[in-house]
Image (cartoon, rainbow, N blue to C red; front, side):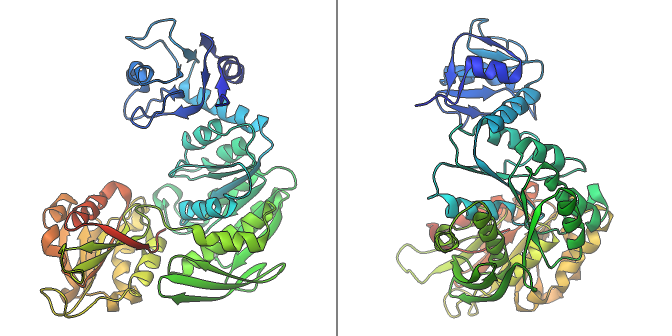
Length: 481
């Protein structure tokens, strides 16, 4: 296997001191997922990564990036010693970007970043050596880690850039130096840090500051804050293409849900395009439209990209739909589970509810005669001083008329629970474990169950408990954000 980094290359890139003549084939920040031959990066987060260097080397790490020789590690162990580990990782990322001729895509947005990135992975997989960010590695360590992992012969790279405080996106964009940027949408998320939707838009738009000369910005056309995005792209000298439901460069003319597929018709710069998204939901159609425009911007044939888009399905925790079999003999005794427990903000909850009510419960199957739509909703975090009002407003979503029961988790969600009509109120609990303990009483055969909430509220543990009720046979994928 061709080395990703040699000791001399890594030392030159970081200005650090390499001990020994080593070579590594990957980069890891976690001993649990480390592969033999990886460079272990001893980041300091909840725990100091230096405490795990000896373990990483014992598991076969090719070397470790450290700021000191850790206790229990020999001075002649394969190390790269730098003054600051995070800055060293950033230097590796910048060096990896400088040595590659890859066409680089960077994605940001309040909703849909990861799903859109995975759509691009599906569309670009057949276009040569493609390097795509894993998981949601989109922050101050995730972006440099993704770059540091990028082989020199990469043809196309897809990065995800997120934020939770002002001034975070632009430095990461300048590190990534993308040829194409895509902003999926701007919605109320992280309002606690930004104070207004306009502030969020300005931060998202700062991704354009990293564009390479002659770069392209793919922007949503239908937002109140679209002018802020357009102004930032124009200031960066970008070529601008827009997508959305109004008349624009990539215009969604129709989105029809047929069973579990959305069939999309669009008017594009090169003419009409018909494509399918293997998940129901109009907002997924819009995400796909932005992804398609981005793929074409890096040179992919639109017909090939549209066909390959059908390979995509939502990642775990972002809208997977599963059939939970309650009886190993009677195949009719199951409920459907929609796992959207990774993230939540007002826009993604609204989209999730709109899709949820398109799912059809089955009557006359379980203990309860009527199949139900049951929503389990956890707190939406980082919404600022209006967080209680924003939670209460979820009760007014039109989809609520078709939802039978809503269970709520978290202190902020009590406002939602109290705003619901009494017949729709299920349980409210301060924390997820109380619902976990009641999993068997929450559902019945014939029900359709949506679980959604911010990651740290841990409604994912409710998903796990519901899965344990049956055989967990996954049948198809639904929507996520």
